[in-house]
Image 1: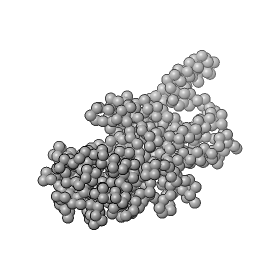
Image 2 (image 1 turned 135 degrees about the vertical axis):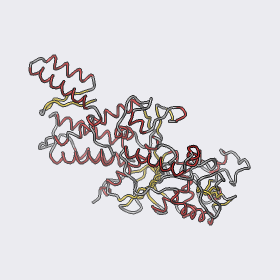
Image 3 (image 1 turned 45 degrees about the vertical axis):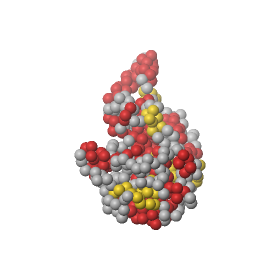
Image 4 (image 1 turned 90 degrees about the horizontal axis):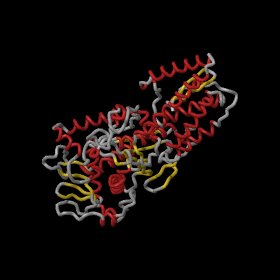
Length: 493
């Protein structure tokens, strides 16, 4: 029996606005698509947070025994400035400014994207297709939409007719908007646009003479609309209907709304059963933006070279920090938050690293089976990682009590504890085991060991005042001494 037969996930479905019990289209198999980056600059930390949420979800589905096909695309063409149908392609603009080929831009920032995610210990997706690698598929979808009477060509560009589509299908079903409100809140066309209506969106854009990236099509030499690529690639690799589509909250409208309309128009059915959206990342209570300086790149976290943080942090510490917030909640990135997460992270690692040294007893003073199911219950409840982490620290407390001789655990429970904590910490949350010694604090460790020896000498000489002073001064510095049967160890708070 696979774990997924016993552990039942509830997912908050943006489409319905409520949590629903997850039931894949094909038992034992999951198809998941996540909108990937537009590779024209270094990957944004907010994007990393979104991708991390779906990496965790991917990991958990695999842990449960599902065979998962996880598709995450690379947008290397068609994404215009301001997410609109006008302006310059973001990648082409970067290429023009730097006087290099667009594909040099794509290569540079795709490599940066992969390197950054590798540092955060991401699993690679099953398939990572590119927009430029699927031009033919996008052209075929446009032809189908035109044949259905829901697309129209003007001066070499092709647009999706939102008002015509809305006559039979609700445009705005995902974002809970209606066309009447969109019309009311949209400025009238200025007479220079080819669109019939302001709400219509581009399926294909004719390339201006100066536009570098272009492909031949039945309508013009041009490039596909940004929304079209995800419809083409998701349906090609996952089918016309698949289980999960994810992305950042900012993509819900218009990007995902347009994906639904395109797929419905082309295939006559809803493309996705569960729509999932990760919330935004802010910094020091404000929106992250280069223009205001309230901004940090992932690599600056690892190097400490940013005025908003006081030191460098290991990638797993930053990952742990992000997973302490639920994926649907806004996360405020602060130095104090990172410092607190670093202390918590190493407390967790210290506990895990002593499990193998714990001595089993005849019975347990902690209900391991109940604790294990609480961990599963938390993550089954729409992937609630903050509650999972809180449950893990219940285990940390128990481990430390066993080490100090204040609690006991049976041999069978010890194995369950070890297997479960390893599964959740490393396989599902994706953290990497490390100690403070491995992160450059071996000098601190040596100094504390010396003080522990001096304290033992003081106690042997019955100089209890000095012994207590060493213990208390270390405690004030955030270093806790733990006296056990095997000697004295220390942890940092």
